[in-house]
Length: 434
Image (cartoon, rainbow, N blue to C red; front, side, top):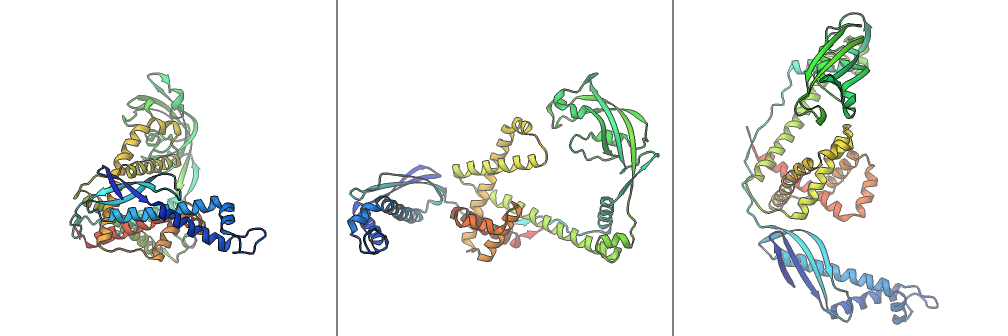
């Protein structure tokens, strides 16, 4: 057994298995084949060992090699457990000579390790506890939003009020010229609906136009001047001054449903009091989840800032890739185009790399705290997390379970994530809330 230190976060563990042990392992595998193999002309278990060894040479060699690798791997783990200067993070590669029964075999396990560090004082840290109170005003605003979702929009000849929907056409210019072809959607619309007075821009909506149509009625025209923000998502328009000629084609007035028996029936409540009670409970529950999530995030940042240690390179690379992929998927679901993502690739990768440092450090630190607190994961907790991940990815739980039965390393990762989550819960529970 020999340990070679490559860096503070990487070690090569060389395990030598003597030829005599390889031979004994091969003979054991062959003996099992002799007792079970079906060879034409012989009853099961009665074929000569030499014939069985010849007929099943490849399978016997593969099983022998698998057994030798497994034994060497366990010896590698035991040897690293003795090393108090670091803790194994993961085995990332295996280099081995040919495994034969007449020669010693050298197996080199390339291991990522975490240098030893002292746990910070993680119990009793101060965390900000956000208020989870729900006021009557909050409930009323939410009830109004619910009513808005079920509103009718009736065509009117009167000027548009805030919240009404207005069909408009507009043509924009920059320095007297039409918008570039790549951003033409922002420069001209022959017919599009805008929510009057809305300050929330989405898609190709120009919020200044949405604000301008308040007070306009069908047939009215207006000139709207604006300057695109310096951080506007389209480079061609950043900081540019534009002039729009806007015409209102139609106004539809928002009419909220009455708070009557029909509305309550649609909401599956008996009356307004029950509706407000349900809304208040839902808002309270949501605020509690948000407050808990905020404290968990703050706890991770605080304990991570209390200690410093080098992080395994491969772990950082993998986390960076995962975070980058998560961002890309999220942005594409929100409608961002591939070309826009490609233009921001280097910037996003840089941000992903920084986020990966926080993620990997937190994982290692919480794992160490889980060890110190002797945190364990029950089968029920593991099953619940598997089900949660299945639903989050749109899979059936039984399908994911089947996949995990063939991928033990992925299952181990899920178990470890649950263990770390429980360790974080212990920290939050023991914290001083301010």
